[in-house]
Length: 79
Image: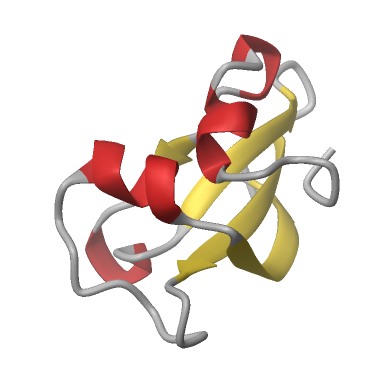
């Protein structure tokens, strides 16, 4: 799914994954739900065209412009 997406907007349209930004010590990271009942999520970091983390704060611009993501981890949100 991530390999076939042109930008993160393609992933955002797949509501089953509930792509959303994280906050606090995970600011700049985004999560995709991998099974809401089980609590697993894929943590990604969107990168700009220079392969750097975004300085941009407009989430819609990040979704529309991100073509590169760093897959950070799979975690259980409830652990």
